[in-house]
Structures are given as C-alpha cells and as structure tokens.
View 1: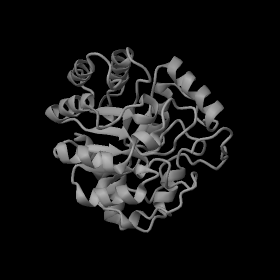
View 2: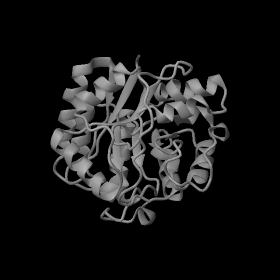
View 3: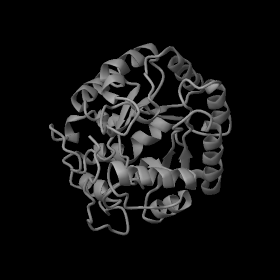
View 4: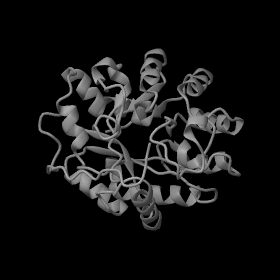
Length: 295
C-alpha cells in the first residue's frame, strides 16, 4: 500500500542499458502536459514517495532514448471527465516529434459522455491502444459502459493497458481498489473478448499468483514487470520470472515516477535466472507482439 514518506533510494544509476541485455523496449513510461505532471509529482510527494526524475515529457523521451532504450510505450490517463481529448491530442503531437521511436497510448475517462467517440478519434489520429487506471479513474471493469470501450479496442485491433491489480493502493484515492479490482473480474472480460489483447501492469500485484495462472490459461492476456521486481514493495511471494509464461511478460519501468535509479529493474532482469530466449521476449519481443510494433 502507498503511504506517505515511502523510501527514496539513492542507488547508483548507469549511463546505459546493461551490456548483457538484449534490445529493450520500455512498455510502461508516463508522459503528461507540464501542469498535470506537476500535480502528479505533488501527489506523490504527499502520499507516497519523492519522485527521483522530475522531467518534462520531452526530457523523459530524450533521457531514455539516450540511455539505450530502443522504443518507448508512452502512457497517460485522464483523472476526470472532459480532458481525455486534450490529452490524446497532446500524446499524438509528442509522438510525432519522435517518429517510430515512440508508441503513444490513448486515454478516456470511463463512463464519460462520448467516451467511445473520443477513443475512436484517438485511434484515428494514430495512437496505439488504450491506457486505463482503475485506482485513479474508479471504474468497475465489468460495467456495461466498459464493454463499449473493449469493443472499440477490439474492432480497431488495439490493445489495452489496464491497471486493475489491487496494489499499490492508497488511502488518498477516491475509491477502494480492493472493491473494484480482482483477477476474477478480469477473467470475465477475457472470456467475453477473446481477441482483445489486455496487459495488466505490475504483474497484477497483489494477486500475482492468480495472474500468473491467468496468463497460462488465456492467450489474450499479458503482464508487465513494472516496479514489482525491484524489491521496493513488500511482496509476500518472491517474484520468480522463471515460473511465468515467458511469452506473456513485458518489461516496464514506470519512469519517471519512480523513487530509485532508472535502471534498477533492468539490473535485476540482468541477474534473473531465465533463459536468454525468455529474456529477449521479456525485454523486447513480447512488446512487439502485444503492441503490433513495426520496428
């Protein structure tokens, strides 16, 4: 659970991706307009940790690309109704500046008026999928209005990155993720939309075992590693990537909203006891497949 004054880790950062790793796609990077980034940083200062990298969107891209990241999946989320269209326009413009090196994801506020139209316009502008965050947006993934968003993604062959793991939760959110989120609820979506690709970040924390079983069962589900293999959060079950289906796990960093070195998770991956083939899938190939990247 997120709580005020969580540790800031002053660990060493290196100037590039560890030499022994295959090419790396970061499948979980955040960008926002300057005013929203500033508000997010203040929220984390008050309710979680001090963000180590306080950057603009362009600085985020320049930093990661100059440090050896081959491709970036840029994420955003609308925290209230009425701003998704503006955010999607911003994302499209930033991605055009960097061409093939960035894939930007759209956002909508679930339940807002014309959400499907907003999403379709974002897809028509070139955005590569949909990002949702149940903790911030307080939606129930099994509500009827969510089905219309799923169908829009399915019909456009666009994936969803959907933060619906119960953790990390915070008392500062306007809803309880433990009431809204569960692997059981997601399974209903996976069954109803078998050709819709869904990624659950943070390995589905705190239901990591349940999500590990789900990726064995459903070919339309992926997970990303973001923040849960860095030994930052107290996790009862030690994460062993060797036990996971290797073609359904993607590397993601949560950059820049992290309290430790940008490459902390990459260094952990570099020492993980998985095969070289599995590591290449986690670092690169699975993201290419999930986001249908043309690199």
